[in-house]
Length: 225
Ligand SMILES: O=P(O)(O)OC[C@H]1O[C@H](OP(=O)(O)OP(=O)(O)O)[C@H](O)[C@@H]1O
Ligand SMILES: O=c1cc[nH]c(=O)[nH]1
Ligand SMILES: [Mg+2]
Image 1: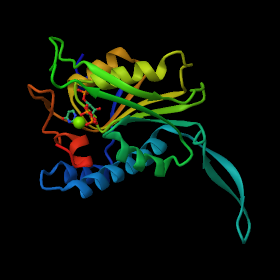
Image 2: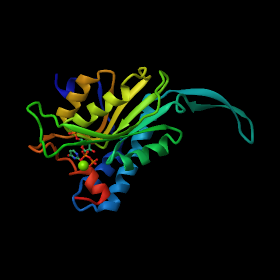
Image 3: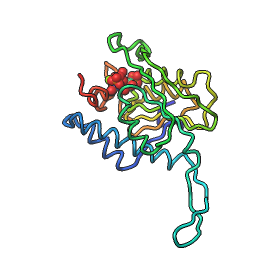
Image 4: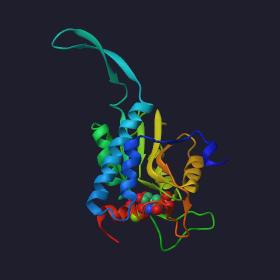
């Protein structure tokens, strides 16, 4: 099945998200505006998740003038955000503006770039640090990583996050830029996940980088090379 036929893949189409992503793709965007762009993108994605996935409920409100019926977002107290070190850190900073009370997990997972991709187009992933909150069946879990390339990192992260935990009410894999191969790998391995992405790019190059992509998100956000 191709990506276009799958209903577990959903694009975040907000114009501000597309505008911000276009700015940070540009090779002339320096470290600080790049990092700030990822923060902004995370905030917009957070608002879009609220709008698309969480319901509202009616509540009584007393204004200075009268009584009325207002709305509150249901389930916003039950959000877990997983930060995949390190490129997800500014992205998660933005998400937290939409979900300030989220419980957070941190996992350091990185591609072993020296080994290269195997015959199936996957990277070996080294996991160095894992600190995860307990998940409940009421939770909306958002696993955030701006780049979803081969999907190797995300599959490793999801295994760790879901290991011995009850299935959450919603499971979102959130990326800014994704490649078809990675979405297929993650979607096939975790059919319970909804794969949200701002841009589904064309392909991976021979080194597993997304094309057109934005380069190495971690290096660009942290000023390393
Ligand atoms: O889908 P994949 O092929 O696994 O690639 C995606 C991963 O690559 C990047 O991390 P990287 O290993 O460069 O670590 P970094 O965030 O520390 O730069 C990115 O942030 C993802 O975690
Ligand atoms: O294109 C890519 C692929 C993996 N990680 C990145 O930061 N960029
Ligand atoms: Mg990197």
